[in-house]
Length: 109
Image (cartoon, rainbow, N blue to C red; front, side, top):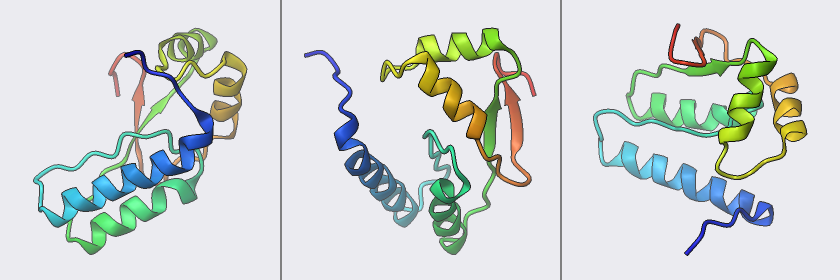
């Protein structure tokens, strides 16, 4: 079976992701990671609020693309096969979370 990305199911996928995040908080998992493409601040706010309400200390890490080569490398690695121009558009409108830790591509901070 081969993975096939279906953009029409994206809202449902985001709901499932958030539901699993809430389940992990309820189960009191020691470390809960939300790994998603949060482009706009409103997309991550519910995750942060839910974690804080559950008593978790929240740390936000954001990958920052500093060069066109980094952008090309990331666009080429995405499992959803999102076209380069759409990835570039997302990078251009990305809204950083205040106080987030910036992670450069390659793992350097």
